[in-house]
Amino acid sequence: MSNDTRSDRLRLRAIAFDTMRARGLDPDFSQAELAEAAAIGPPATSPAPARDLRRLPWCSIDNDDSRDLDQLSASEALKGGDVRVLVAIADVDAAVPRGSTLDRHAAVNTTSVYTPGVIFPMLPERLSTDLTSLNEHEDRLAVVTEIVVSSDGALKTSEVYPAVVRNQAKLAYNAVGAWLIGGGPLPPAAANVRGMDEQLRMQDRVAQSLSEARHRTGALDFETIEVEHVFDGDTLRDVQAQRKNRAKALIENLMIAANGVTARFLDARGFPSLRRVVKSPERWERIRNLAEEMGEKLPPEPDSIALSALLARRRQQDPDTFPDFSRSIIQLLGSGEYVVDPPGTEPFLVPLAIPSIAGPSALATVMLMASRDPGRIGTWFIALTVAMAATTVLLALADRLQRWLGERAVLAFERLMGLVLTALAVEMLLTGVRSFVGELGK
Image (cartoon, rainbow, N blue to C red; front, side, top):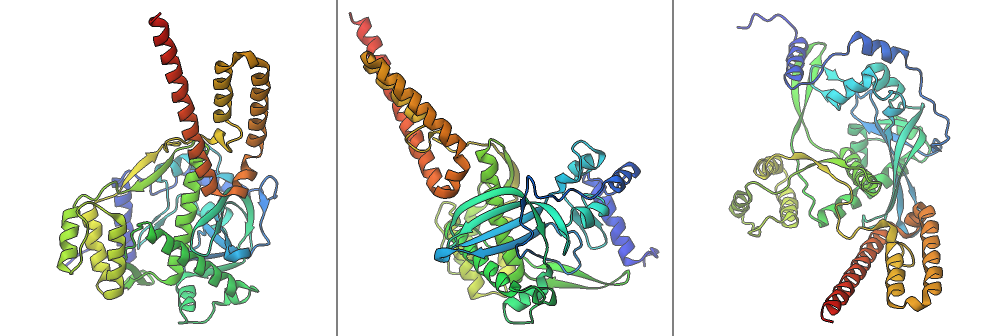
């Protein structure tokens, strides 16, 4: 029998502190860090240069007891069945000076850590639950990812920008999830905001279409049983199983889309991003054997689309055992790893060569023609000047062009013009080689 007279919560708390230190994380805030947090005033919330989006029907959906609200979502119906979805992430950087003691503490832990006995916030509570939390009916600075999604879940256009937002309704997963499937009433906080019911249904429809689109391209959808520790004061009374609900899936799908947009935003501006990936399944043959035991077949080589389809069938055929099947597949896939994704890794990506009337491709074309017909040097000089002027105008209008054309069209132009530029370079190289060989033969 244990002689430990501490409460359940205190014992779990002690285990959590020891684990944090063992993993090289910092569970405590120093007096200097707490003093720095106390001295920080409310961050400025004037719209300029951020956009003023306080009028939008923003809502937060999180755990029932969450006090550190870091994301909001809103949506707007557009013509043709498209929907504009906006995800706002709390702009913590606006309140914490770079290089400060709080900034260095956050750099060590990198995230808030949640355990049954205690929560280790990345920043002191004055910041994490107040000044930088997207609290209900408070104006806050945020970084907004705006996405236009078609009815089939395709991402048509996207933007990332700073904004001032205002949480209109603080909602919880359990209540919203039950309402979405007809198992409960609309939460009072949502009922008090005009149109919030349709807002939630619209976000849910978009989230489902985004999920379906990802699965068509091979996204893997697992389900694992999470647990909730139920306390009565400081006594642990129960450990209850929790499964995903509709509201959690809503937020997850919107965040996945926003993360993808953010990664492409960073890449387009020459910044690397940090991603957690499984490069290749470690035990694909064993995954195939497991599928065969259930009367299913997978191809000899790793295939995410085939595996995604298998997971979808198993979820539908046997939902009760699907969490166990998910766990087995996850273990066989192997652990993920964090990798730095450097910018500009796609071949033939030449942003300046958009559209085809200007950019490196046009400049290279003019240079090639000048070398072939030097007698018209005046004409080629004018052509080169026009090409450079067009390039300057296009660079100045780059953001507007991207919004108008859409990401897919821009990416297609990038690749096409990159190929044109490469073809011209090869042509110039071969011409030079022929000239050189011809001179040698004289």
